[in-house]
Every structure is written in C-alpha cells, then in structure tokens.
Amino acid sequence: MTIDLITNYLSILILGISGIGINLFIGIKYDSEVLGSFNQVLASYIVFSMIGSGGINFSTLKFVAENNSKPQVINEIVMGAMIPTVILSFFCSLIYKLSIPFFSTILKSDLVAIGMRYIIPGLFFFCINKVLLSGFVNGQERMKYLAFYQSLRYIFLFSFLTFLISISINGALLPIIFSLTESLLFLILLIDLNNHASLLKAQKYFKWIKIHLQYGFKCIVSGIFIELNTKVDVLMIGFFLSDEFVGIYSFAALFSEGFYQIIIILQNFYNPLFARLVSNNKLRTLKKITNEGQKKIIPITFFLGIITIIFFRWLINQNIFDDKYNESLLPFIILIFGILFSSGYIPFLNVLSMSNMPFWNSILIFFTVIANIIFNYLFIPFFGIKGAAIGTSLSLIFSIYFLKILCKRLIGFI
Image (cartoon, rainbow, N blue to C red; front, side):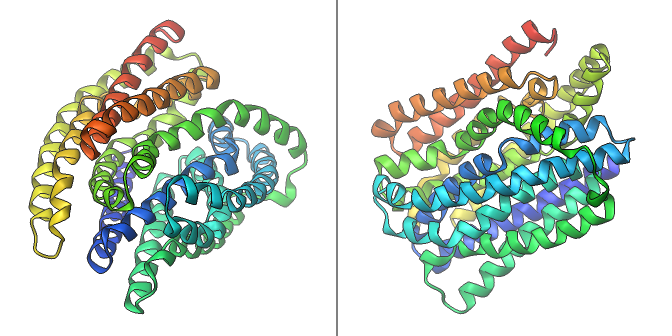
C-alpha cells in the first residue's frame, strides 16, 4: 500500500503541476476573461460527464472489487458496463451540444459557447474513460496503473495546451485540449482492458447491464451532485459577475482543488476496501482503519495547508501576473481552511455508497449541493468572489457534519 500511495501521490503531483501550468499559461498568455470562460466550460464538462457515465463507474468499481478472484465474472461485469456507457455517452454528448445556447445565455458569454463546441468529443470519451479507469482499474486495485494513466491524462492536457499556445491559437478554442487528451487516453485504456480482461469471452453480461443501470441510477444523483458541488462557485460567479471575476476566482479555486485532491486520492484506496469489508460484515475492522487514518491525515494536511498558502501568496506576487490576481489570495485562504477543517473525513465521503447505500449517499450529496447553492447565493452579491469562497467552505463543513450523522445512524461508526 505504501508503494501504491507513493505512485498515486506522484500522480497528484503531476496533476498539480499540469493544472497549475495550464492556468498559469492561460493567465500569462491571455486575459482573465479567457481563463474565466475556460473554467466555466470545464465546469459544464465535468457535470455532464457524470450524466454520460450514468453512475456506472461506481457500480463497476463496487462489483469488480467484490469479484477480483473470478476472471470470468470480471469479463461479464466489464462488458455489461461498457455497452450502456457508450450509449449513454453518445446521448449525453448530444444533449450537451443542444444545451450550448442556454449556457451561453445564462452565463452571458460567447466564449463559453465556442469552448463548449470544441470540448464535445472530449466529453464522449471522458464518460467512457471514467468507467474504465475509476471503475475497472481502480476496482482491481491496480493502483500503480491508476496513477500512471491519471498522470498521462495530465501530461497530455498540458502538452497539448503548450503546443496550441505556441501557435497562438484563439483563446476561446483552448478547451479542445480535453477532446485531444481523452480520445488518446481512450485508445490506451482499450489496450489495458484487452490485457486484463477478455470481453469476447463474456457470456452473461446482459444481466450485468441491468445490474449496472439499476445500481448506477442510484449512484448517478450523488455523482452528478458531487461534480456539480465542485463547480457551483464558478458557475454562480459567472451568473452574478463577469468572466473576469470568474478568471480571478478560478485561479484560487484551481490551487485549492489541487490541495483537495491530495486528500481525495485516499478515496481510491478506501473505496474498494470499504466495499470488501462491508460485504464481509467486518465493520469493526473498518472502524479501526478509519480511526487510524484520521489520526495521520489531519496533522499532515494542516501542515501542507499552511505551506500551500505561503506558496500561493508568493506566486501571485510575481511580476508575470496581472495585479488583478492579487484579489484571489483571500478567497484561496478561505477555501484552504474549509478543506482543513474537513480533512479528517474527506477520504471517507464514499463510505455510504461502498456500504451498498447509494440512496443515502445521494441524499448526503444532494443536501451538500443545496447548501452550497444557498450559501453562494447569499454571500456572492455582498462579498463577491470572497463570498463564493465562504459559501463553498461552509458547504464542505456542512457535508462532513451530515456524513457523521448518517454514518452513526446507518452504519454505526464515524
């Protein structure tokens, strides 16, 4: 597990470098409006990707983790997942295309409309890749492979961006990097799938189609709201303010998201473990593992959080950035402290879903998103982008409090 953790944190390091590099390059080469529209397009892309995968990534993860010792069953599970995922991805991409005028109007941005058109192929492949990567590879607990493929995604994104900037492409077209990346990653994941499963030998996959759709439908609401929750602040700033303010805020949000991912990566280890222990009714072991994890996670994340704030303050004071980005410091600090106060429970946010309670997991996420929307609606008109940071941080803390209540009543721990 130590080796797997190291490889996955290296992946997160690459994610951070890539994500920071993407926003740095866009922020330096283009104005804050381009950066703002880019992140609004990305927000819509992430939310729609959950619809396109139909929650089947969660179903694949759960059932692959439970049947790792049965190769024939794995073939059937994965074949049963791929068929509906491809169909859902196609229709989701079509709906996304038809929704472009609506998003462009509500966000008052022509740049968003252009970017959405160029990211459509990426959405199609991203939905499929999510099932292959987060479902199949993660379910088999091949964590080094998971880290490698995730790293490739970030490397591809950054590489395509630097190339497009080098040829001075129109900033509105930059979201095409996701289409190029996901199509290339899809080909690589197909090779991996062929090496670790034999889909042509699958026989009883029709029953798994039904199982995946049923379980995925229970999870999809939580999946959509999970992704939506990470983008509520950006979308609501776009609604209340301008692309310029979205750009300034998203610069802070990107770095805080990178810090959040340092903790989230632990879910990749706990999720299959939760699924296996709960299915074997080993709740005492599960409680022990979570308690030990919290004792290590909290002090480490607080130390890293302070270091991250110091680094971010130094970065925005560099001469390569417009002075406008100085306004992102206070929102960044607020976002980081929201994560720090929740850090002891963030790795366990999927415990209800992995405990075969996807409905209650959906309830948890639903109320978290509602809280996020309400807080942002209340604070943004008065405090601007600082209000968005306050609202987002409060909603995260609220989600942890609600998680503790549900787990104590439904499972008996946390």
